[in-house]
Image (cartoon, rainbow, N blue to C red; front, top):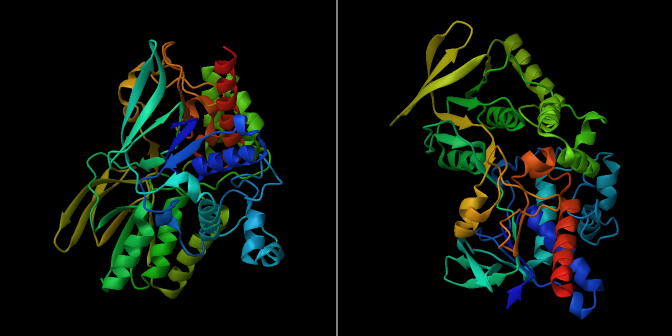
Amino acid sequence: MVYDVLGIGFGPSNLALAIAIEEHNAQAAPSDRMAAAFLEKQPRFGWHRGMLIDDATMQVSFPKDLVTMRNPASEFSFLCYLQDKGRLVDFLNQKTLFPLRAEFHDYFEWAAARMAHTVTYSAEVTEVKAVKEDGEIRYFDVVTADGRVRRARNLSVAVGLEPHLPPGTVLSDRVWHTSGLVPKVAEKVAGGDRIDRALVLGAGQSAAEAVDYLHRTFTDAEVCAVFAKYGYTPADDSPFANRIFDPDAVDVYFTAPAEVKQSLVDYHRSTNYSVVDMELIQALYATMYREKVHGRQRLQMLNVSRIRDVEEGPDGLRVTVEYLPTGEHVTIEADVLVHATGYRPHDVAALLGEAGKLCLRDDEDALRVSRDHRVQFAATVTAGVYLQGGTEHSHGLTSTLLSTTAIRAGEIRDSVLAHRGAVVAG
């Protein structure tokens, strides 16, 4: 069998694409239907499970779900999920656009379960081979760890992001990344491990959430936030700034000159990067002040500072922190160090193997990607590779965010259909 689309990864992006194809097939004539399948290396659906803190809320509004921006009448919307779960009225009575993060994850799982016939879990892709016919690369063979090979005319690569760590950092039982925060904390609590001091490196939303979570969980521990800023920067979620996440903004960004692209990113970094919701900032400040009043300050802010060295011994960590204005170094003993240092895209070209060498690149050595999210190849490649993520350089700030996930899924589906039609016409 040759698939029209074979998805690598089955997070929200490829889940949205699976739904878009499903909805197309439900209305299309048999000859116009698309054959699609998806591969996911995890044993079940999961999206940032390590940060599913019990009371954390989404930072995007619920209509920016898997389908609504593309098809408001879809049966896969968050509102349909609420109706199915018997919570629609209860949710509406909250008068909020921002569900709990755990609830939105449950919505994703609900949608993924309805699309289970399209996905194979525990299927780690180990190799992608280009398949030539008449001198052209017309297909890709995707090999999984069990040795099975699947052939496709198009790939949709949505492998998510990988944790970004400072050079030389080695994760351990005491050194974590926020991507594993909740299960790591659960292990410590279940094991009865004593935590006297925890450090959190970073100044963004995940860092502030980690500080708050550790402080609430380990009620006798000192929790120290370490960051180079003077204080947390509030996220700009004002209506005009949020327009940078509109579908139309992708068109503006894509057609803009390189210097304008950079300006837009610089102007609007405060909507997403290294910023914190104002409500959480105020809550942390109130906690710190309250502790000062009572004479026991467990929450510490080591601002204008950087971590310069970490030594791990059998009984804990020795962390050297530099206060940047003076260059003074202090050594802090800690039980846990959490890196809230963000994420970075996977190397898609490496995943594609030999075919990756045929990808066209721009002057900055970034992959050339068309407006329809299709990677540009040498003329000898007629098979398609679509990227869902890792395209901030070409498509803007929404590349790795949920804001345009539904729209992008529809664009990729329509592009695959258009290219298939062009081949048939040719």
